[in-house]
Amino acid sequence: MSLDHSFLKAFHAHREAGDLFHDGRHTAHEVFQSSTIDALLEGIYDGEMTFGELARHGDFGLGTFNALDGEMTAVDGAFYQIKSDGRVYPVPPEMKTPFAVVMFFDPTLTVDLQEATDFDGLTKALDAAVPSRNIFYAIKASGRFAEVKLRSVPRQEPPYPPLVEVVKSQSTFTLHDVEGILSGFRFPDYTKGINVPGYHLHFLTADKSAGGHVTAFDARDGKIEIDVTADFQMELPQSGAFLSADLTSDSGDAIEKVEK
Ligand code: ZN
Image (cartoon, rainbow, N blue to C red; front, side):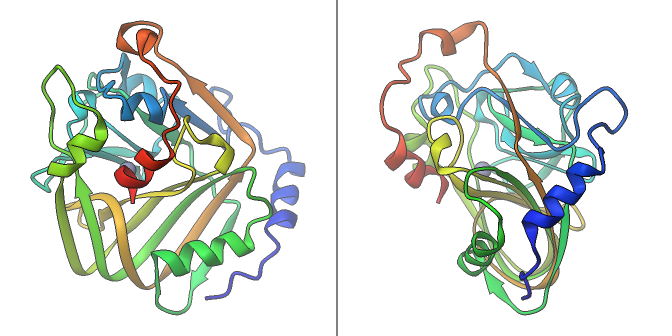
């Protein structure tokens, strides 16, 4: 894999080009997030934001659904719901999300994956190549995978248990020799409490028949696209359980258990 490009140079060149708006309605390269990861960890599984509203902020990213009804991945301009039965469903605009991270993906850099790599290898290579650990990266890797390990979470009924309890009954799927798209983000370490520090990736097969939250993979070949950005917008719930939730505790251990 060759990742010896100057990310910083490309980042600056892109910025100087003045390409700040796609169409005047939204800012290019802006990562948009609804609610916080800690709220999700605490069992705040019902949000007010519809996917119709979310789509105004991006058509690429990840998240979940009200009642924690599966994993969300957004790629190629559409939202997909991967339920705990492992199947992929379309997402109607009136559906709501308690937690989602999206953007209008416009890659600053494209890197060819020239040799097989796993999750650890890919993230180490990306970490070594990115200009700073303190800004945001959206990552889209499309290609062929020898193996992808995925999970999805089962729909919950109130009163909602915390996420660490739910993942004990999560569904796991292992796909072999499959084409698809990894999509997600690298958030800075200091965003702990707000989002998942480090890499968070979801997956969708090229035929859109399977997917989920990625726990491991072996990529054979493919193309990695990266959207480097320093723009981040967060919209918090203004009603419901979020307002009275206790979000004071350190969630570091819980995030490890839930996401890895
Ligand atoms: Zn996830």
